[in-house]
Image 1 (cartoon, rainbow, N blue to C red):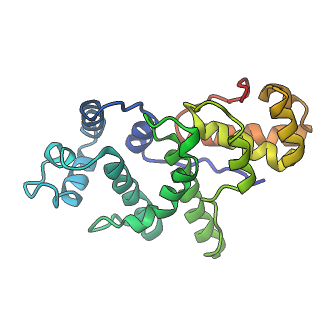
Image 2: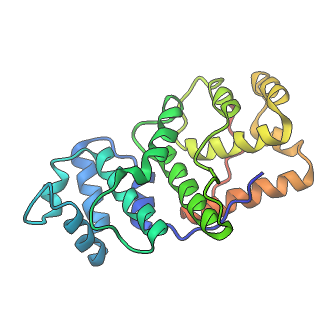
Length: 229
């Protein structure tokens, strides 16, 4: 199982991806309130989003694009920076195509009021870029869920508010136990805490370390073990 790194992700983007944005008015309000706390970021976004407002007014630009489109472009800026070591001169959505695809595959299991699936994809993408740079291997791919994990998620009858944590949990358990055993446990109504307690000590340590690394990277330290699917 991959050892998750602790990443220094952009606070503004992480905060917005975790937020419950239930209306256009609320989306724009929360986005502007958060971004306006960082003057340098405001300047960067106003320059990159000037195609939506030639006077470089971010509030006006936000009114012309959807939250998801803004989110994708916002994230692409940071992926580009991680890859090239500098911010782009224009938006390049190719930087986040795999994150979009990652989110699409699990959209049936998550709430549409937040972007936590996209957040996990973003975390994995930045991790992927770093590993490729460190190891000199451009074939390393992290922004891709095993088919077995998606199949296990389909056993759930409810949407998860924190689907990113659920995915990490199921991903680990599938690696440790295998699809057949885990499917039987889930169908029998066994809680994730009970399943966790049945793991080997080293497996428990890997899972906890990875949860903590991800939680630290997104400013959240909750371990998601008490839920039933």
